[in-house]
Each structure stands twice: as structure tokens, then as C-alpha cells.
Amino acid sequence: MSLSALRPSPLVEQAAQHLREQITAGHWPVGTKLPAETALAKALGVGRSTVREALRALAGAGLVQARQGAGVFVIAAEPAEDWPTRLRRSAVADVYEVRMLIEVEAARLAAGRRTDEDLAQLRAALEGRRRAAAGSTAEFVDADIALHAAVVAAAGNPVLTSLFAEFVPALRQGLVDLVDLLGLRADDPNHGDPGHAALVEAIAASDAGAAGEVLREELEQTLARLRAA
Image (tube, rainbow, N blue to C red; front, side):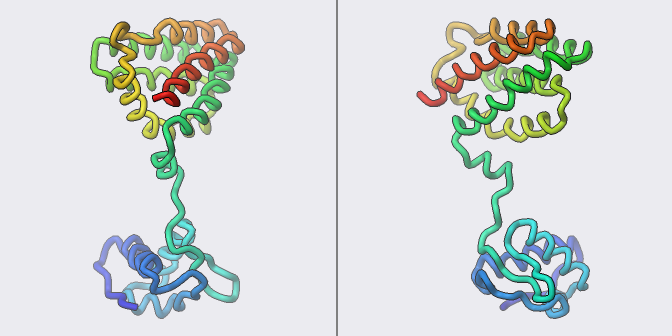
């Protein structure tokens, strides 16, 4: 084991990184009990509290596990992928399927819960999408996503809002590529405007069934294009 003293800051991050490197390099194989906190602290040149926090970080990454009365053991050689990383590695069509499940229900909730302020945001986002039709594909996709985000926000569920935000980075580039690849805006720069307008109006009318159905149809068409691309 070749551990060396650390620079003053940030100690916890550095300690976690050094310990992680030892694990991923195989110096501490899966099933190995790590040295005691005191020994690790001495080897790294830090306090026991720093080592303790570093081990918590490694436990959060799925690399180690503390066993009551026995110590800390290595349980994996590679850190578990977090949710954003997993999304980035997933096929866009797979991500889009889950997005569709979330958004259709969000549209239904939005129709029943939307406030006047939500409605103003939706109409502004729809106009923003229309203005973006004169710009680049990336600008148009960003404006489209902003409208969908406004629909999700109008559902009034912060968990849904956060979950949708996690999907956006994984979806954005795939949608930009899809629009360009299939030439969806070649004949109509404001592709999909009637459907999006109908969605906003369904939410404005508090028609949950229509809102869900309009959005489902629009997303299913895009998903079909993703699968065929």
C-alpha cells in the first residue's frame, strides 16, 4: 500500500480519492477489511474525523460497508453509478420511454392543479417555442424542453420537477440530433406547434384527460422516430 501525506485542503475529498484509488487498483480486494481509522489517519497525515468522513463517502459510492463491531470492508471494486451518470449512458429511446410515463401523468396533474401563474408561464413558454423556431435547432429544442418543463412544474409536485430535470441532459443532445437527422424542421421550422398549443389549452381548460392524451400522442410520435433513427 503506497499512501502518502495529503495537502491541507480539501482533506476529506483527497482522503476519499486516495482510498478509492487503492480499492479500484486492487490493493484492497473485495472482501478485505480496511485498516483501522487510526492507521489510515497516520498513513494519510490527517485526523480520524477526516478519515471517517472519507469512508462515509466511499460507503455512499457503494465501495465499502461498515459492519458493527467488525470494521469497514470493501464490497465493490468500482463505484456504483449515480442516477445522472446512468442516464447519460442509457439509450435515448429508453430514457424517452420513462420521460413519457412521467410527463403524461404530470400533464394530467397540471390540468387539475395549475394556477393562473402556471398558466401564464405555460403561455409564455409556448410563445418562446414559437420565437425559437426562427433560430437554430439547439435553440428550438431548448425552447421545446422549457415548455415541457413548465407543464411538469404546473403539476405542483417538486419530486416530479426534480426528476424531469434529471432527464433533460440525457435527452437534449439526442433530440437535437434527431431533429437534424430526420429534417423535422425542413418544411416546418415550428414543428409540432399545433400539438403543443392544444396541450396548453387543455391544461388551461382543466381537462386532464385531453391534456394527457395530447401529450401522449406527441411524445409517442417522437419516440417512434427515435426508435426508427
